Length: 238
Image (cartoon, rainbow, N blue to C red):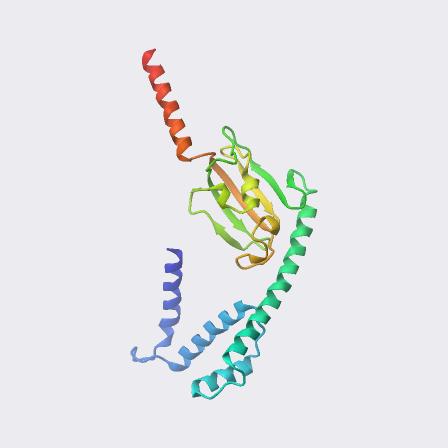
């Protein structure tokens, strides 16, 4: 729903000023500028350095149908090489930042290290009752973010987690949590998404996690229902 809303807003933001006074024909100059902005944003996101003047010349050549100074295959290979170089540079920088942060963070009060230099957590609110075991399917609320505060993922309300399908840092980080407990997990990229992170390769991951229920698997539900049945039977016999 969020994506649909965003696209709708984007359409109206551009569509409103793109038409001339007669409301029928588009203002070509404004439309062209808007298209240029969209192209520019997409190019910026690739991480490839761009010579804007040369890019514009190439677009003009493309519009006229004239031949390019290099083949399309050579162009794509060059772009891929530049992207790889950019990713490698960012990955190296993020890895250094992650290591430095965890080394400093482990000296802070209330920080628990599960794997030295790789995985830490801090209890924000203590819980009570059942704890998460490796074979459980816990019900949680969570938000994942990078060190710069950028959110890369979150639960839509409450979400059931299958532990063996999560990254190692999240899996190991919530083991032993009690129902009602809230933790902040600090996950080294080796236990996270590594160099293949969504938008930040080798980035440290920070998860804010609240445990609603330790286990909501079918087996747990069956055991709970059986226990309730026993209690009801015992009450009726008294």
